[in-house]
Image (cartoon, rainbow, N blue to C red):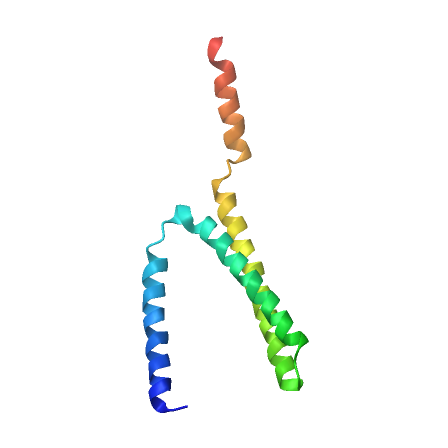
Length: 110
């Protein structure tokens, strides 16, 4: 590969970092959970692809790289679901809030 090709790939990579950072930084918190769900679906596809590559490995090096691909994709999925679950917990009403809301509506007529 020529150095021109490497320079083009590096330029695209750096520009993708800047564009990705700008896009993600401007996402409102209310859209975080749906975007994480979509991201988890994409990472599921990455996991399946890593398992297919690992299954067709032709040597120890390919097997090790496939294993790390499966491991990292799995960690990414688990982490994504953990963050999504924590975000959803923030939107649930606490038991004390439910009890006080229920008492306020029952005791109004006495």
